[in-house]
Image (cartoon, rainbow, N blue to C red; front, top):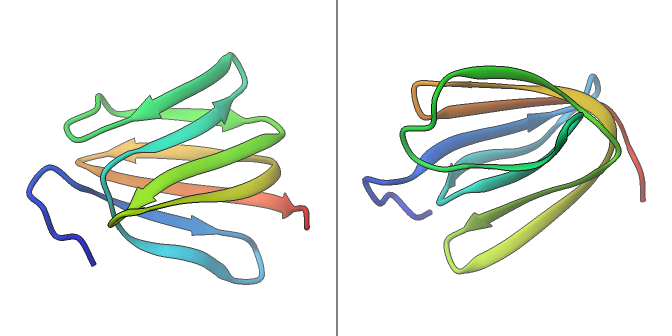
Amino acid sequence: MDTGKDNIHLTIVTPEKTLFDGMVKYVRLPGSGGLFGVYYNHAPLISPLDKGEVTYRHGETKEHVAIERGFVEVRNNTVAVCVTETKS
C-alpha cells in the first residue's frame, strides 16, 4: 500500500460489499455535471454520481470500477463513494 503523505483514503461500497478501501494518489469520478478529479487537500463536497467509471491510482496500478449511479462525499482527504449498482 502506498502511504505517501499526499495520498487520500478512498472507500468504494455497494449495499452488499466493499469494493475498495485503501490509500490512493487520486480518484476520478463521473459526477452529474461531468467527470471530476479529487487529489490531496481537495475542498469538501457531496455530489451525485452518474453512470460511468470511478478511476483511481493505487500504488503503481490504475484501477477502474464501472458504476450505474451513486454519490460521493469528500472531506479531510477521505473520499467515500457509495454506488447503488455496478455492472460487470
